[in-house]
Image 1 (cartoon, rainbow, N blue to C red):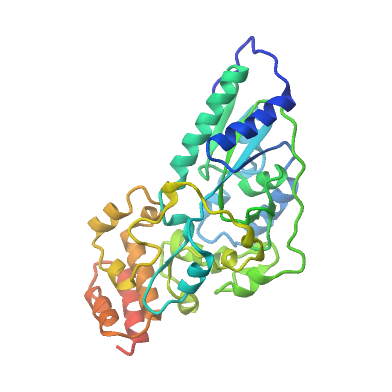
Image 2: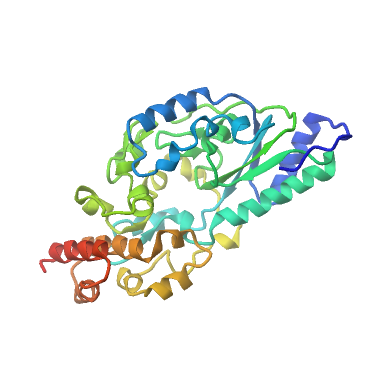
Length: 358
């Protein structure tokens, strides 16, 4: 974290805040906001969630204690958190909805279709920090993009970027929820924005459409039931009770966003880096299942998908093939992996073949 210069020039905090919003927009962020409020409520909810074991195998969620909910403990000297959001959706929502549970094609969470957002947004946040430094001199900061114990959604809510919906994603009244979040923890004394309030009302559409009923109550998600957790974070076998409900979702799940009424206001992203790669927005399951490990690593280079590895990739697609329409191509694809070296892959292939009466 750069150190503040001893003789730092004075600045007008309100003016600087507005300039930061403008610089953020110039760098491709759709919005920036400022928060300083304690995350007491978020901390209590997190503690209860962890105590209930709803984080599953994500032990890193409890590893850092209160540093996750108290910014100054994670980054000493933090006074103001600058939260930013960046739209990523580059698809038609009706087309995406029509792809759900398709009888032969794969569904990949829309955020993962293009370039991995972590590096792109970190680079932009660094440029934002550099621009601030040119205006005020050296200052203390640290940039985060889903890369450390940071409560990004409560921070963004406090910064006025949106409210946390019943599905636990952040929703913006003018832009829906198809966006990424990032933060600059700073030692700058900047005016805080007013927190956004919930506008979900009596709507429970996200809860109704969740394939595995992972949203067990408003604002309460059991990750152990969530398809995003099951297909990405979960390293072992996918529980039998969820395999049919997963359908053709081979990496993540978007149902709660695709059917959220607020996403009628979603904005199409101007970032070309978020455009689909390898035709993953409309790919045949049998074609993806045929990728060798070398092909998987090559075709997912620079993608968030690469982190799950080839074994989980095949595991997920085997489940989707089990849910696909029976065809000679599907049976042949599964038979080709029947003797795969991985016990996990073999187990899911056997389940899929049994689903097709083999």
